Length: 459
Ligand code: SAM
Image (cartoon, rainbow, N blue to C red; front, side):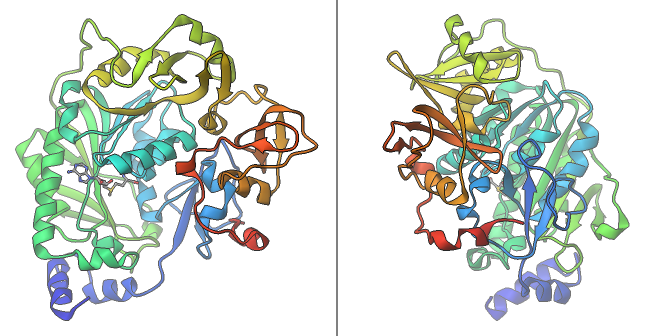
């Protein structure tokens, strides 16, 4: 960082922490961490992230792209500090919740929240940037939960859901000071003017979604930046102007998380010179007024949702969970989605741009039925639906690279590929080769040295 900029940065955080210690920590290697999908893989023999039951630190950063379990949603690569969110969601999630993750791509907080929500919960994961909403959708299909809807909208587009959500996550776009050691762009884009711009945008996002929060609902505001303008100042101004208060989070002293209070705002700060993680700040805001949501009388599907035909219900057998509604999208893909949220799905489809909702099952092509590649990742996939075949590391990587496979010993027809007991995909075995329908846009693009694949395993 150029000297004049560095001084401006130092000045902006001088009241927040020991600036020299922070800058020294930013020069060191960052720590790699992952969070496992407990419904796909078990415990790992690695050091744990203390504030997240499914979080682990890795000794070095492997090439995750060459690990089939990464593609199959068996783990998510997430910076450890962000996993602190578990400490807030877990005690709050004592009943089914309706959750809005309004700045959700690429899906780190969403994939953390989903396993913590009791059955009967619904999560709407939104991302305003179209290309990022596609990545969010891919990551959520891979994570395998059917009770989520991915939308591509501006935060203010949710105003029709007044009082609907019990929990809103605003993991706000910020000046990214916490990313300084990870990302050269974050350094070159930093300026005091950008900090001001970000804080205005953050306040606007809070205002945009506040009406959607139910009375006694909770909003979690977070950034990966150190300065006060984008953290405590945004929160204190917001709670002063609304009927809201900040809540405390129970901390363990050995975590070295810093609790700060300023003008009514309470924040939990992760500084890399004190805590084993990157820069992160989080505040919990409770709402005390407002009205509960009431569903409009008539709701019709629209947008990408084509039909809820009764005949689709036969495809329920591909899943082990009950109470699923099957719908068709405009590309003739059948999806399963929680029955109890049918009306709200219709309502959201008529106001928002739905990228996907639920779990993909099959693609209907005339009178042919092809299992959808996303069905393989569902945590509720009925393993008896198609014959299973276990494959080795190289074959699994070739599958995710979208290469045709050769499975001469296997039976013909659709097969479910398993790698280390995790379902990774489907191929159609025609004898001399097996056709690979994995989508090109999700496929591994890099050149692969197949002799060194095992270097990228996580244990
Ligand atoms: N929650 C994500 C996760 O854990 O993986 C990270 C979110 S990132 C910090 C902030 C997101 O906000 C980005 O995906 C960005 O595209 C989006 N964003 C940018 N401008 C926005 C705006 N004006 N309103 C809402 N979201 C915005």
